[in-house]
Length: 356
Image (cartoon, rainbow, N blue to C red; front, side, top):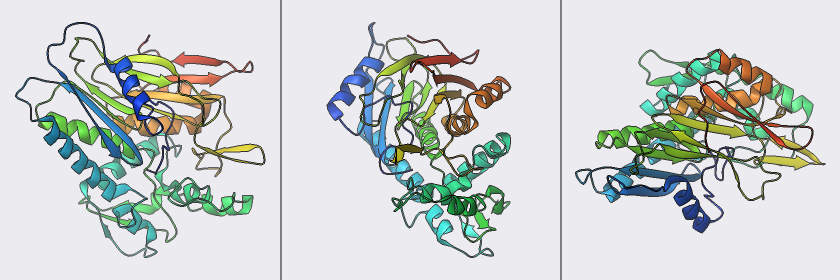
């Protein structure tokens, strides 16, 4: 999870560049006509190198919004202290820095929950989702330190050999991790924002809040309805021509009791000698995949799952992702595909909701 957006595909908010536009866009998506049964509370802040936004509507008995905001900030700080590669003292950074293959490193519940989910999705996608991609992420300059140069093919091949998630072992108590390769590194950036969303929703539920919308860096989870008595509305960004293009909305999706995460390669990239190197890297080749699939939005029961599969689908490409989601009843997907004419084509799985 980086400084600056590293998953820029389904962007509901103009978060970093323009706070005034951000506020306007939130009203456009979340506001609505109709009488509200309770006021809409909106909270926001910064985390994971991006922003978070929380909206909910509840009776007066719910805790004061400021106390809930403080609790949200606190739990997100704890998540960062566990799995942020941008914090040298974090659990994941200490593990990555170690070359001791005999040492069991203590981990917390945030780390172990993400690790277990990652192992499951890693196996299910046959490695398309692979958190051991850390060495490649760093080499291509998408990690905590900018790359001084684009790695050559020999360097990439040597780093691919380190991308081995199976070399990391979580003990039976879920409280210690050991690495089997001294040079292996983990990077949970493709799942951590979704996990952060889920943690915040658990906090809201613990406060008795049953109707809410939670977003971190474009990853979203909803429960119940908007106070106006309608579904929450989530915007999927139209793929941009370049990183400086203004954001436009491709689709507005109604959501009730669902999570959605989106991944795309069209904003976060390096360009060298006229060639773009995107931030989503194929763990098997060490390079970003050239594909007509520009972005994919995944709906799942929880945001952590949606987040991880969205990245995996970008690695699989259009045909592989389409076939995969068709075989998984618990997942739905919305694909934005580039065409030879330069236009965008849309495709959705059978259960993905139609929007506006």
